[in-house]
Image 1 (cartoon, one colour):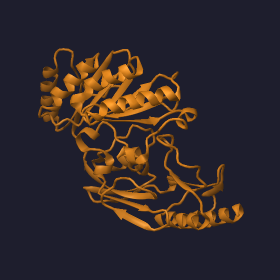
Image 2: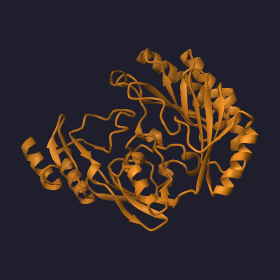
Image 3: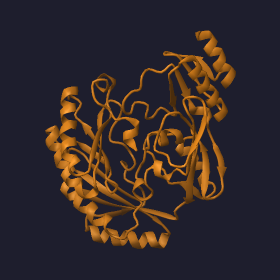
Image 4: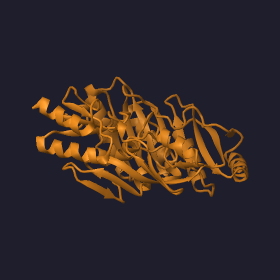
Length: 360
C-alpha cells in the first residue's frame, strides 16, 4: 500500500513535493484543490492527517495521535488578493513576508505573532497573538473569512473562526495604513503588585494604546512597556503625557525593548498560559509564586490579561499537575484560566496539556 499511496501523493502534488517519512508520508500541496485531493485520499485510505506551517508551534498543547500524512503548507504561499482594506493570504505565507509585501503599499496586518517564522495558517489555527492583541484583539476575532478543507476533502469557508478540524488554505484579513510614528513608554517594575497597579492605571485612561506588555523575571527586575501608534504629532504629545503620568522612572523610546514581542521560553521549558482580568494581575503573580514555591519568569500582554509563566525545570509531572490544579481553583473565582501550553516530550505525555480549542 505504501508505494501506491506515495504514487498518488506525487500525482496530486507533483514530483519532489511528496515523500515517504517516519511516520507515513509528507506532502506539500500548492493549491486548495490539491489540499482537497489529499484529504479525500487520506479519508479513502483511513490515514490520520496533520497540517504543519513553519513548525514554530508544532510542540504546543496536547499532541494529537500519531499522524500518517503530514500536509506541509509551505507551497500555499503568497498574497492572493489585496484591495487596500483587506488581503487574502495563503495559509503557508509567513506573517513576516506578508508584512513586507504589504509595507510596499504602505499597509500592514494587525498581527504580530512572537513565534519566529509563524505562518498565517498557524497563527489562525492556534490563535497566536502578540502585543497588538491589546488594541486589535486575537487573530480569531480579526479574520473576516477563513477558507479550509475539512477532513472529508470538502472546501469550507467561515466568517466566524473559532478553530476547527481540517486544513486552512487561506484567510481574508483586515489591513490598515502603516502608522506614521511609534513610541514605547517603558517603566521599571519589581513586583506583581506594582505592575498590576500601573497597568490598571493606564488601561483606564484615554491613551489609545496599541500594546501593554509586562516582563517580570523571577529576579523581580522587570518592566512594563506601552506602545503608542499614530500620527507623529499625536504620538509625541501622548507619549510625553503618558511618561509624566508614570513618573520620573518612565522613559520614552523610539525602539521596542529587546524582550518586546518575544516569548520568555523555548521548547525545553514547561510553560503555563494564564488568562486573567488586568485588575487581577497582581493577585495572579502572588498566587503563582505561592503555588510554585518561588518566583518565576512571567511575560505577556498585561493589558489584555494573557501572560506566560515558565516553571522551574526540575519539577516532576505530578508536581506540575498539582500546581495547575491549585491555580485553577484560585483563578476560577477570578474568571481566570490556566493551561500548560508547552512542555518537553518526556513530560508532555504525563501532563494535561492545552487543547487547540482552549486557545480561542
